[in-house]
Length: 298
Image (tube, rainbow, N blue to C red):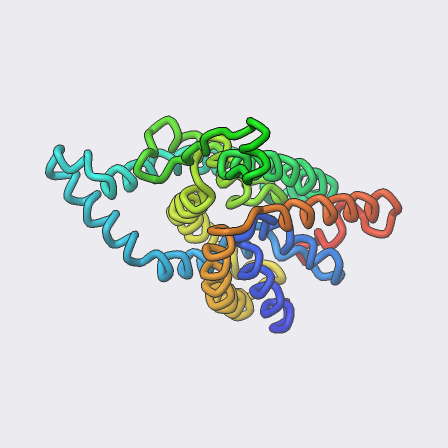
């Protein structure tokens, strides 16, 4: 892998990790469209350490409070009722599914799951799911106008839940949604945010917990894959460059995304996912791209 390839892939990782469009799919597609070798699951996992470092920096105050309260709850059972301590325990609960499935499906993640036909399908399907989840949130947030009230169609706005109302069941559901992102094209943030919206959480609460939930899973995956990061055609130097680029770009994207979702819907991402998936299916179907294009690890 050249330095230019690593820089561009780091840029793609940073731009797409926190948006509900799937960073692993975009890394795979960048290699396929550019006729490069697939950077591989190990490269993806290690560069995600950079984006998770951006999460830790952005949410450092929240994470500091959660860790402090969680450690105190180990000594003082009464502290386990504290919201920050509960969040810490629920992040652990939510991390279990992806930890177990990640180990069980390691060979599939590094092989069959990287087929472009599967990636295209998951882009479309999860785009539809995200759209349905976003629509359910929009209905709850809709405030009728004067003409609607006059027509007798006034209804109370349903309050969406915040993280203070997160319980073990919902934490586990979030975790199962996150585990779906083991398949490139699903999107970690897209799956967990969709699950949160269907559970009745606000967009901001679902996104915030999604980012916090990703930290242990991504860091563990990245550290586990470190031993393979310098093998094959992907050397340590370019991998490190991509990780640093992903960190810087990822931090800027988090700041923008958290502001965006406070007042806007996910519709632009839904449309983008569906169009990209259909385009990819058409290109593979027409023979322009093979289903394993860019798949050689060199």
